[in-house]
Image (cartoon, rainbow, N blue to C red; front, side, top):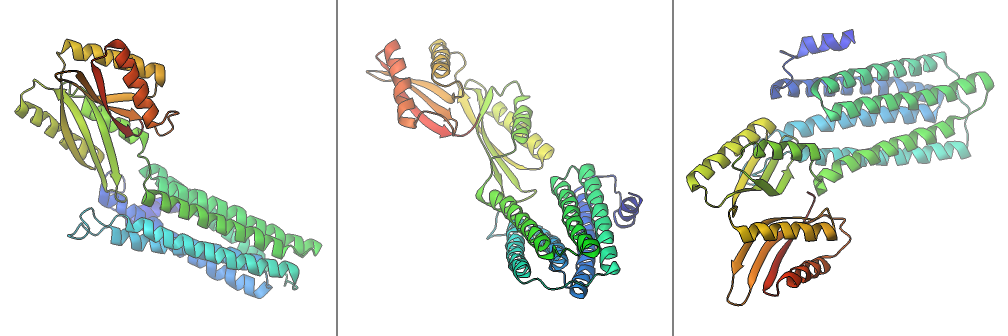
Length: 390
C-alpha cells in the first residue's frame, strides 16, 4: 500500500480532492498506465518462460495478461477520444466511444481465447515433453505477487473515488491470480510427480480468457443498447425536485446516457393550474439548475398544470386509485383531467404500466372503462398508456 501512496503523491496533484473532475481523470490515467506497464511486463516474462519450457498453459496465461494490457490501452485511447467536446454532427458528445472501444477489446479477447483453446486441445491430443525450470516457477510466483498488488492498488483507488470500473478491475486482477496459481500448480505437479497437465491447464486458462471476453462484451453492449437508469439516481433526482412544495409530483422521467459523464434527464413536473406562470417558471428553472449542479447532468423539466380545487376531479382520482389497486397495485397514473362534452364527461389520463404487468393494454383499458361506466354511464375514459417503472 505504501507504493500506491507514493505513486499517487508523485503523479497526482491535490490527490485528496476526489470530487474534482481533473483529479479523477488523473487517477484514471495513473491506474491505466500502471495496468499497461505491469501487464506488458508479465506478458513478456511469461511468454519467454512458456517458450523455454514448451508449456502452452504459461503461453495462454501470458496472452491473458496481454489482453488485459490491450484492454487498458484501448480504454485510455477511448477515454481521450470520448473527451472531445460536442460538435455539429455529434451534439451529445463522443462519450459512447468508450463503449465501442470496450467492444473491440472484448472481440479481440474472445478471438485470442479461442485460438489458445485450440492450441491447448492439440497439446492434450499430442502431448510434448516439458522442460522443468526453476526460473519459470519463480516467474509464475512473481506474477501472482504482482497481480495481487495490482488488485489491492485498483481496489484502494476504486473505493476512494467510489469508481465501480476500478473496483471491477481489481476483481479481475484477483481472478488472474487464481488462473496463474492453477498454471503454477500444474507445473509443480509435473516437476515433482512427472504428470503432464499442461494441456488441461491451458484449456482452463483459455476458457477463463473467453469468459473475461464475454463479460467485457456484455458490459459494453448493454449501455449501447440502453440500460434502465440507476434506481438510486432516479430517486435522488426526484427527491431533489420535490423539495419545492409548489411542485406536486413528477412523471414521464427519462434518463438518457450518452457515455460516462454525459447524462440527460427530462421529466414533467406537476404544478397547480392556478399558479402564476412567471412564478412557476422560476420554480422550474431553480429545480433544473439544482439538479444539473448536484448530479452533473443536463436537465429539461416540462410544466404540467393540474387542477387541485376541483371536487369532482379529486373524487374521480380517488376512485381511479381504488380501481387500479384492485386490478394491479403496481399501476399508477398522471396527467389526470376532466372535460365536459355535450353527451358525456371525458376522463383523460396517462396510465403507467410496468413492463412485467400481467394484463395487455387492450384488457387494461377495457377493465378501467367498464368500472367507470358502472359508476356513471356518461363517464368516458381516454387512456394513454406509458410503459416503464414507477
